Image (cartoon, rainbow, N blue to C red; front, side, top):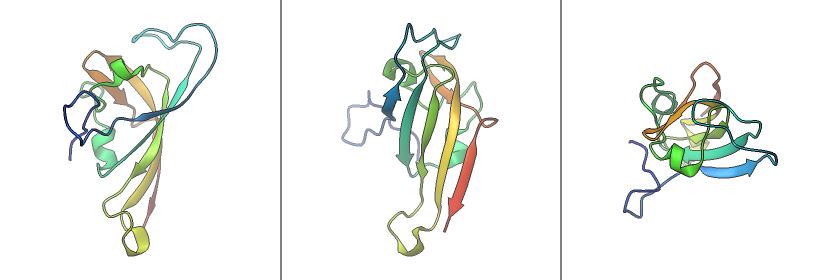
Length: 118
């Protein structure tokens, strides 16, 4: 299953949700990190190997337009059968946004922390 952005004309959209944004001056550019960090929450049935794709393959295709910037944190849950007995295949994760262009935002495998349940 691929990421469904907030710009898709569908009821299936599943963008990351901005949890908090630090108060301060500027957000930085897409090339440089600003002084203010943001934390995003994302949950889906995607695998963590999907979200942690190579920097040239942005996962969040609308990340730039949502306001993601390098240095932001993404936390979330990926699952294959959430709600099933034992919640098999549930993975929680935290990682950093490493690259943002108008084509989307990439999340780093090097900054990733994951924990698998079930």
